[in-house]
Length: 243
Image 1 (cartoon, rainbow, N blue to C red):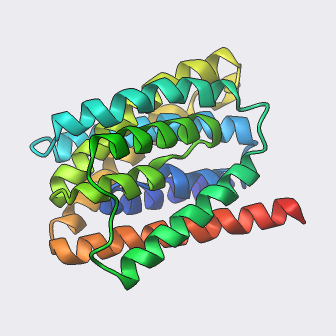
Image 2 (image 1 turned 45 degrees about the vertical axis):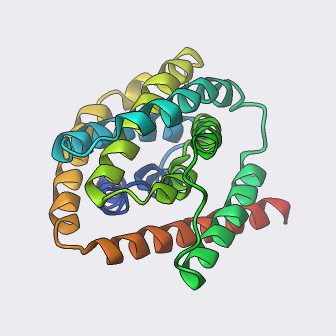
């Protein structure tokens, strides 16, 4: 029963993550912690995230912004390595709290003032890529902040999802070897990886079917609501840590 709930939560996280263009790891990681320790959850969710992003790239393959992939993705990959190496040394809950405050302010301002967004500049793409990559390596999730910065470029939903998935894939491919080198994954969990692969494909497929029926204007609101909820969750985790 416990294992079933673990895999059901993975499926739901992938559906939601595909619709929002990010968030499967953000949603799945705290759920996975009910079943396994943090380091095991970190690497299992990273594998799951790879499978999900491969599926999204396949389903949205005609919508990739190669320029953003380069200027956003390269700093993401480089800073991911640093974040992954610091996993055992930094208070992740405090970092998540700071990130949650930032995301909550960004989302609320964007909802109250729909025309507000970051300047879609090369500088902001590099900043967003660096921050999201570092946090992905360190706390297992950088998709929300990646989404906040990518939203500035007002991409069509298919382009947004495909580009975010490609950047996230590069980050995951980078951080998993670091986690494996730190012996985060014990042998008894190897059998879970193939099933996570199947679940990621199924979740991405269902998510794509839902995305195809969502108008562009509503899509941006869905992304902002997802950012708000994730920000609140991170703030809550940080407050619990301080208490």
